[in-house]
Structures are given as structure tokens and as C-alpha cells.
Amino acid sequence: MGSLFRSEEMTLCQLFLQSEAAYACVSELGELGLAQFRDVSIALIENRCLLNPDVNAFQRKFVNEVRRCDEMERKLRYLEKEIKKDGIPMLDTGENPEAPQPREMIDLEACIKLILLF
Image 1 (cartoon, rainbow, N blue to C red):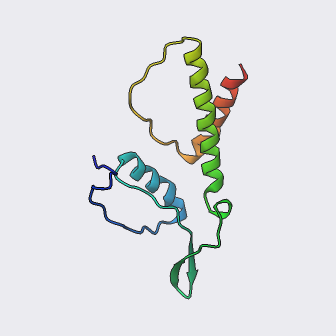
Image 2: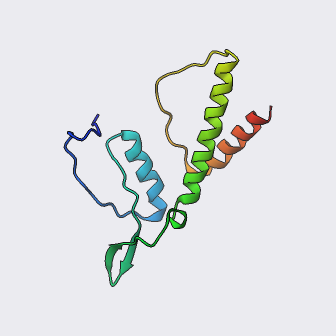
Image 3: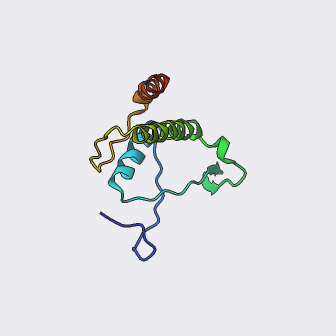
């Protein structure tokens, strides 16, 4: 497995992905732990890709998905804190689960919401 330390040799690459395949590709690269992503916005002008500094974070294509993930992560951290506070033992496998598919996100959000209601 690679490392993201400054002394580690890296290569800057640019990926162009179809929207339908973007989630699966980025998820797979992220789970390998061998990639670091830079958040840039691209504008196509006269068949040339140019960085678009006028686009703020709220106008980016996947901002709603990122917000949903952040909110679920916040709720799960709260739930973990409450479990530890009550002294309930938790199994820690040390492994990160695979990223859920977009269609599974709704079910995951509903389960988290239901757990927090009780």
C-alpha cells in the first residue's frame, strides 16, 4: 500500500469519467488507498478544459452527496459516543467497510434515523 507523505513519489493524473461510472471509479480508487483527489471545477471552452475558479463549493456537481455523507458520518459519530458513554462493548475489526452504492444510501440514512429515534 502506498503512502501520502511528502517524500513519497507521486504522479499527477487527470481522469475524465462518464457521470454514470464516476461514483464506482472514485469509490474503488479510494478504497485502494493509493489515490489522493484534488477538488477542481472544469469548464469546457472551445473544446479546451479550463479550471473554473468562479464556481463555489455549493455549485459543484456532487455537493449534495458529500453533504449527505457528512451528515450521516456526524450522526454515526454521535451514536458511537453514546454507545461508549453507556459502556456497551463494540466490535472493532479495524477494517473500513466498502462505500455503499448510491441506491443504498437512502436505506442507510433511514436506518441511522430510525436508530437515533430510540
